[in-house]
Length: 131
Image 1 (cartoon, rainbow, N blue to C red):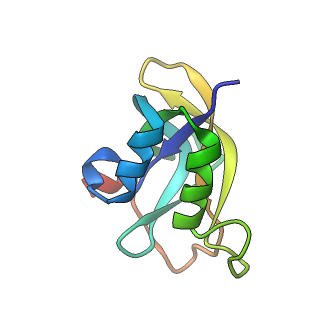
Image 2: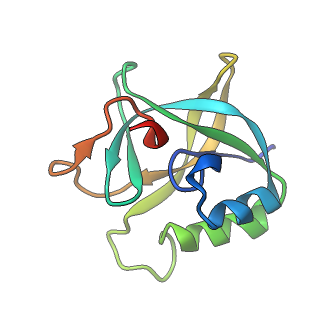
């Protein structure tokens, strides 16, 4: 099975965050992609929450994980999810369906925002880097 990761925030290429270097050291860019979710501005970073509405689309990038056993624990630490972080954790990592630019759908790891969104501002266009 091929492991994929969909990123939509600070891990994207043009976000210029240092963690992106870790991502590209252990993964290969595949394509721009979309994930059916609502995107919220949390702070200097966003959070995506799955949506039943096809109109809600989050823009991001799909990566093929070359060394998932090395990369995913590092990303879990960065996203503060998993063992050792206070609950409820801000994110949870789940396999979700994402759609590539060519219309192909794949299952990819996505960091999903795991808290209440009622007081948050939604990023209407779904693109964190184009607000």
